[in-house]
Image 1 (cartoon, rainbow, N blue to C red):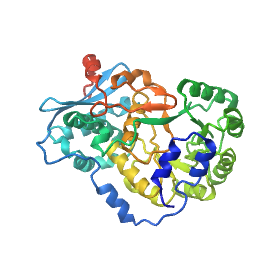
Image 2 (cartoon, helix red, strand yellow):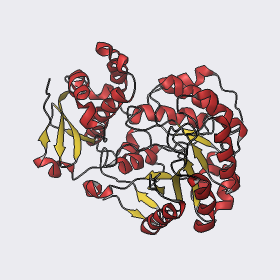
Image 3 (cartoon, rainbow, N blue to C red):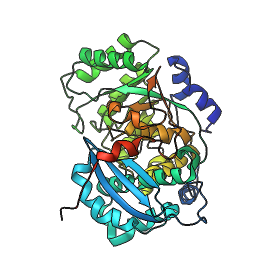
Length: 419
């Protein structure tokens, strides 16, 4: 398959089910010969478009601070520039790693060298032995605050730091995350979210979550798939997420049902670390298989993409270690004609991180996820991020766009090490 960006960008703006499904049913399904070294070279190239030869921007401090239910990482340079990022929900468990293994490494370093520093941090004090979500979440929080700092230093939004802005607004889908609802109850929830946001796409849960083929409720999945198209109609794009519920045969059966209603994607049909089973399902279906939210290895992502195991890639900006690493994945996927739809693990500002990432990434998927929880942080951005007619606007303020965060953080409390 040869990837046609013009065609892809065109269909992302069209809500018609028939057009989008004809264009996307076989996204990334055809094998394309790409040398492994080419994908390695893509990842080795700098992602940030900044002049690293400038006067160094020395990091003087980095701290974790708390404001209500939201935790921020705040980084200051020696010349007084401040960068801020928002953590995800795992901070209450992982903060010792951040405070002990991540923050001390960055103190005294040149923020302009952030891409090189990420590689150095991985091996510093054998941090690689913590490879996985625990390590990369903490790295992502620190990296985000440094990128915000760099943007403020340059007076540029993150989209300019990574190249150029591709869009001013991002199309979203809505989901509930429920598995305890009946099909009728779940459709009502989705209808309400569509009404609230103007979204043209939904995603619902199928299976029981890593459940070895068991459903969450008796016959819920089959009923929900059938009812969704009947009630939501042909103008709503439908997606389904199994969270690794199935073995090969059951995944194919559910995938065929999704194909029957013209669904756009089938997410994590098999356990996320079972590449062989996922590949068998992908080969048996025409519907694109998506996944990657649990992935933390660049090497394994390369295999998922080049091996055509996934047709839509979904790294999490926290679980995978931040904007720089996720941008490498996006470019590998782009080379093979595959779109990227980032997973969101941050219910506070995950919507904003997704919007910022999507603002500069050419090959985003038809729709990006909007979780609930915007109320906590939406007004920190300039302009404030709002959902209108199924789109979120991209902030324009420097860095991550949190122009009003410094004022809000005046009452924030620093989190001190307890070890």
